[in-house]
Length: 295
Image (tube, rainbow, N blue to C red; front, top):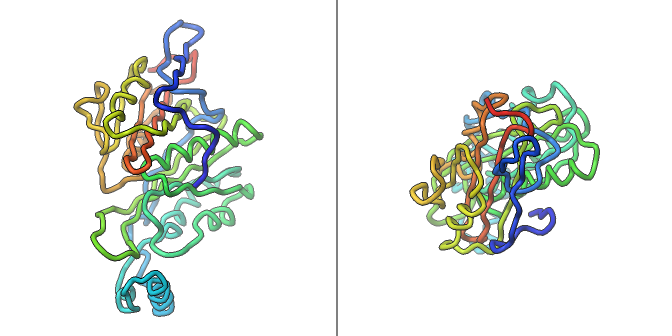
């Protein structure tokens, strides 16, 4: 888990960002990322298919690993399982983004990988530019928001031109007991200095109890005028007007799929999700650059 600076407290006051040309609040939730949204890619070819079954050697390894942690699972419990690993998911992405060097890769996922793997290392070796890579996990549905904060922090600190933020979902679990139903999918956000799909401002508010989540969200978006979408833990009935929920079976990618049809000059959109276990609220506003009108 990576943390970029101090997250905001729910009682912290953040002044509204104002357009110098119009004098109106932009509805942003904090400083904008130096890089703009250039492209949104959802489920490149073959990403939703099965990556195959566990080999006997890997099934035996996983069974040994399970026994070390007191789980009664043998090789047969893994041998017949078809799964799609995170490396399977990111492999088709290479052809989509290899047209220019990538400086930084940030992966984010809610569920664990289907097997011990190195998807970030795979992308580092497969993409031009010798990019630095991070992975954000153990933050639940707030992981994508933290990934964007990591990207923003590095873009401010160094001359980074192009960043790939990759969100991943897969539903093969190596643990025993009742398991959630999670689908398979990938959403990649390409950020670049010449991006045309909007500026991003992202905030992660910590220490937010479940009863506070909706009111903190409403307060954070008090000056926001645009379309908003929230995660399953935030009820649209009491959220900002125009709120829509994302599919719960795609906890990492579902909310962000709404950006796939975004065009240059599109109006502001706010995305928000809440992780009760971590008591964290993530908010991201995508808006036309200050001084440029929405179409």
